[in-house]
Image 1 (cartoon, rainbow, N blue to C red):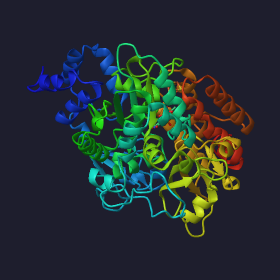
Image 2: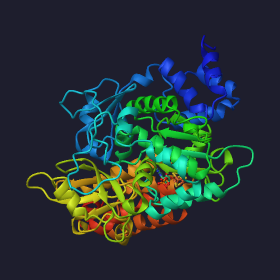
Image 3: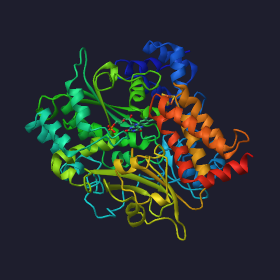
Image 4: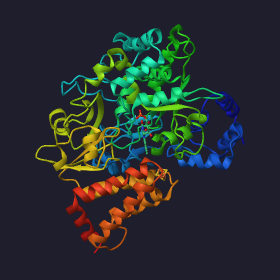
Length: 559
Ligand SMILES: Cc1cc2nc3c(=O)[nH]c(=O)nc-3n(C[C@H](O)[C@H](O)[C@H](O)COP(=O)(O)O)c2cc1C
Ligand code: SF4
């Protein structure tokens, strides 16, 4: 049975680009859950088969199908929150359930209640707090993305403009051709900051050169930030939202895109409000929309809220999610640069990548390239959390020694403790051990250790931590978040999690290790996307760097 107002909601969104997610949220927000009637009305309104819609809706973690579901507390169960007693927080809140990492590892343990975020550890009062600003440049190195973020009112248009905001866009539209802009970005050495490190100018040029019959090219800001241990995009969006919007407009100009989406993870409701305000300001000032700054350049930007699924950060899964399809990753080729949103050329870029572009244009390619150390170009935001005195976001020159970041900038581990392990790329880069702390923070060095920098999340574990338990939690996360499309990942993550929990039955150390290596090898070579390829790095690095812990686990749990 339809409710009064259902039709109005459907009419409000039906003609808009990417209407399914906002429509689902409109019903979810209004009713506090998605009823059968709501699903039927949406399926009918968007002419989607009800069975497909049901499958898609139930894939997302945060779309509740039970009355009152939206307001039920959800407690973060990410790796850092597990160290900080998330179970006790959950037990203390009536009706609370767990959720995968919520992207607030610097403020454990976060609790999502409806559209409010509360933070505070076990025993402490839960309260709503704004995202902390990065500490005042502790290393004294020149910054790019964080250079102005700590200034008062930076999140407002007036505050952003006070320190040169939107001058890069204005100058580009006045003085540069798209080709010249591409040249600046290319010479800066900027590469994707969302994980894969693909050269940004090369991606943009491919979109620019691709034909786009029958519709617009698209630029997408990937603000899904679902990787455990990563929370750098949130600080940019919360405190410098106009830098992201300006970066999107510059990307659109370079690629020839006339529409853009910012795809924001569900778990950042406060960020959604900040972005909506900033976008409205930018639109009112003629910086987004038709004929931007009277230049003849049109660029319309839409914000879309995800619904909770780590895989939606993978760019093709994100595109399916935007299009209202089941968010499985797509087979590639073809790649999004030629066949992206609605099968037309699309550039998907990370928040940090886009926010780096306005300062690069304003201050020059050589300036940005020169911020890196040695042969490395530019900077990287690092989210640091876990057993370290000063967790938070840091902007480091690429090539900075990890030890300098951990000890000099962030204060090292607690008194009397030593660092046993750190993760890289959030979780996806696996573990480095105490013997590896002299690595430098850049892809070539980290890859030589079998890891990678990726999106730049580093979680620190001191000598009191049980590394097999940490690895098990990591693998349980990947098993939970595997989309299930391909069997090496769907089954492999489960089998690895079982071996790490001891649930796989009695085994010798040799058979345990060879099985784990074999499963991981199959996953790495046959999985269809980065989740299944990266997950075995957790077990590989555990076996390589913590063989004694593995031996104790197999010995104690199995034989
Ligand atoms: C499982 C998985 C999750 C991902 N999550 C994110 C994410 O949350 N944010 C992001 O920017 N990129 C994420 N990526 C990488 C994207 O697929 C893509 O490479 C990136 O958005 C491109 O932007 P960039 O070139 O600016 O880095 C993920 C990849 C995989 C395989
Ligand atoms: S590797 Fe895993 S997450 Fe990626 S498509 Fe396959 S099942 Fe899905």
